[in-house]
Length: 344
Ligand code: GLV
Ligand code: MG
Image (cartoon, rainbow, N blue to C red):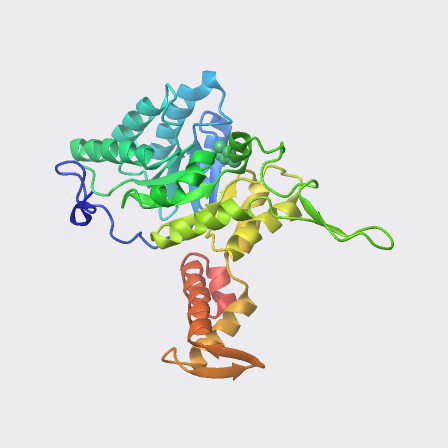
C-alpha cells in the first residue's frame, strides 16, 4: 500500500482510523463468559473494578454455547453502563464457522459501545486486512462514529514468524497479547501449562563438588521480546495473555511482572484474584516513581549528566524516568488511591 493511503478509511464513509491510539489504562483485560447469566449479572459491578471487560466467545466456551455467548455479550453491551471502562470481545478465529456472524451481528447491534475486537490465532497480516476491511464496511453501513480497534493474539508459530508484518498491517491495530497455551501447542512445546516456567527448561551449573545448582529459564522470553519490539516500533500496545494456575498467585505475579518490566502494559485476568495482581504489577512502584520524579526535576530540559544517590543520570535515564512518570500519570487519572501514593 502507498504510505499516503495507509490512514485512509477502507470503506466510503467509514470513520477515519486513529493516527495515535487513545490514551487508556488497560492493566487487565478481564475475561467473562457471556453465556453464563450469573456472571453476566455481575458485569455492572465489575466495570468499577477493572480497566477492560471482555466477553469471551472463543476457547473455553463450549461449541453448543457459542450462540448463547454471542447473544449474552450483546445483551450485556446494551444493558451495562461501561463509563470509561473498555468493552472488548474475543471472537472465534477467522476460519471457524462462527467468526463472520459474530463480527456482523455484534458490530451491527452494539458497535457504538464496542472498543476492541480481540482476534485469536493471527497468522499474518492477511488476517488483519480481512477484518480491517469488513469492519470498515460495517462502520460505514451503520454510520458508526469511531473505528473499532483490533487486538491480536500472538499464539501460533506462523504468527511469531510474521509478528513485525502483523504489527504494521493497519492503523486499526490496538496491540497484541501473547497466548502461551496455543503457542505451546502450535510449536509442539512439551508443556501442558498456561504461562509460567517449566522445571525441564533450565540451565545447570558445571559439575563439581555437591549438587549442581539449576535455574528455570523464561520459556517465553524470545517470543515476548519480539512481540514487544514489533508492537512498540509500530505504536501499538504489548500485553501478556493468560496465567492458568489460579492457585499460584505468586507464579502469576512473577509472570505479569516479567512482562511489565519487559515493556508490556497489561495482562489478562481470568479469575477475580488476578485483577488485584494485575493492578499491583501494571501500576508502577511508588518508590520508582518518586525516584523518576527526582531525575526529571534534577534535569529540567532532559540533557546533561547529574548524580543522584550515587547513580549516574543522563539524557537516556531521563527518558527512562519519563516513561515511569508518564505511566504513573495514566494510572493516577483512573485510580485515585494510587494518585495519592504517586503524589500526582
Ligand atoms: C490464549 O488464548 C492462549 O492460547 O494462551
Ligand atoms: Mg488461545
